[in-house]
Image (tube, rainbow, N blue to C red; front, side):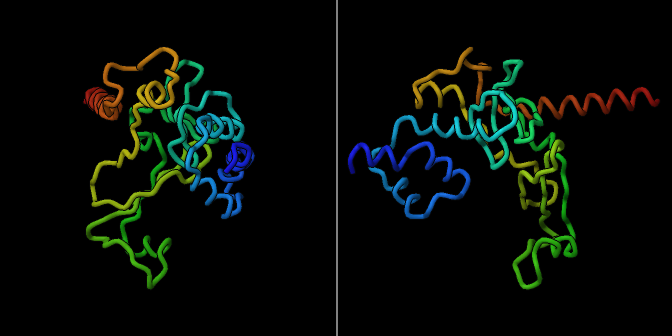
Amino acid sequence: MTEKTLSNISSEENLRLLVEGKLPYEEVKKLIRMDVKDEDRFWKYLRILQARVPWGDKILLRIGDHLYIVLNAGNQRVVKCDCGHEFGDYRQNWKLNALLHVRKTPEEFLEIRPIGFASPDHEMAEVREFYCPGCVTQLAVEVVPHGYPFLFEMLPDLDTFYRDILGQPLPGGSTDKEPLADKSAELTSTWAAGQQDRQGGEQ
């Protein structure tokens, strides 16, 4: 392929159509089969995502259909929904700050899995549905054993990704000496401390 042809295939307009699910399949295959990918594709992708949301915080990475890690006005890296609702530090599992609906019975499973389709064993597993408190969009579903901790699917090393892969370090450097450390326990510990304080006040 010529350089001009490659440029047309991976144009920002084509990428926008791809994000929206409107790019014809033949064009999708051309994008996949490119021997040499365009070096600025990630930046094109970010511009497309940024244009789709109603807020101005800088998107650093998309982590779901409706979720992003952004740099907010307070210079904090947080998880944010399409609607603008913030879930807090990206190193804490965003699900801890989401609305939760749990299905545990066969009757509840039937609401989403018609008769004849495989369903979880209700004696062993439950279905958890996570929703945004701001717009009530469903953000994730997990099928896990009863009592299993919330799955934390993605904890990216943003600084390494931007510095070593993209060649453009993020402003301000690392947010922490251990950027890959899961900080979820810090959030739940504050809940436990608050519960203890309330119990102490009731005595």
